[in-house]
Image 1 (spheres, rainbow, N blue to C red):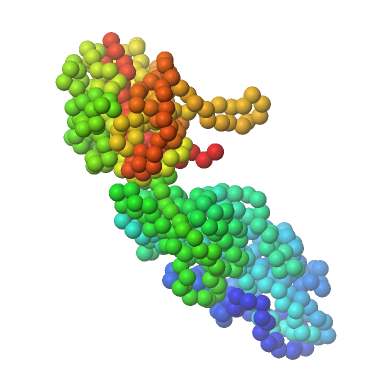
Image 2: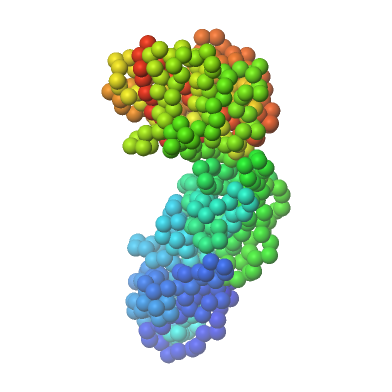
Length: 502
């Protein structure tokens, strides 16, 4: 097992007997399942085990050989005659009940837990000379190595990087020396290394142009990266790239395919060229942990397109805001419940505030896309009154001058097919459950259409097409209490806004 090609080292003619195996990967003399973070040379390490087949001897099927130091292998034993000619097949990692033409290769979906290199499936084939007992097996990588390095203003330590909707299984045929990708797809969490570098191993596959392929979660934001050309993950090769994340200004991030990485055991994959972009695909909304003191500003105007100067527009800093008009009696107060880790909205029974006069608004300046999104959160009433309150929600454009169209998730009459349809509103209300129980809610939005009026369904709003400017400078997520006639405290937590993929 040395060198990432199929060339065979010269073998020594023996007189038969027990076979001594030497194994390595690529150009490494005899080792594997470790690999440096700056290079592409893998090596075997202690406690690794392989399975070996002797084509001409059916009893030597999936014979286990293991190493305690990465260089010396014991197992079997496999014994050959002095005049016999044998073909050896081998694979890593060892698994029971494998056959030579059907080795199952399945990568784990969270490669950050035990390390990406544990998913490095290997295979080898060697036609030995008669009587040969010193057999040097050269292993090849069966799958593909993907490497990402984060850069730019938005990059930071602690980020999580995922490969989206990639094939995670394959079948290795040792006799034909082929690897066939399967059909199971999942998101794969990449292994976080030093220096904002991430790696994962997956079966060879092609990702269609302009398909979201990476999701990066960092500092409460979720970025989504796609490449304008087809992206190929090739067997036995690595593809290294840099993903540059923009800052708060909404600049698009970019994927750059690295072309200068050295060729080693993992040979360098090819790039078809093309442009790439990274947009924010979601937000994990932070709560104002210090309560009212962390509200950035009180906006002294109700929501109205005609009051543009007082709106939470794109020029504002990212964070929580509160509106309170001068004509509101007993305005709503905002706080934070450290026990529930929730935003609290307290409304008095004497309050005269309408939905657009005492909203609590989270203003995000992260760049989004003109597509479909889903807002999810949990909420409850404090249960102090038999009249349980209601929370109102909506999302406005970056300049806070129009409300996005809401969508209703509808299931087809037959089958499980679901689709999003116009809900005829830009705002909606959810009544809190009894007994102060938490309730999880999801609301779907189209950022492609918006209205300048707020509607909860009594009259369908008139929509117009949005522009890129409406979303690429961020959005405003609106919450308000809609209870009257009694005092109530609404609690809201686990607020997330994610791109909806149909």
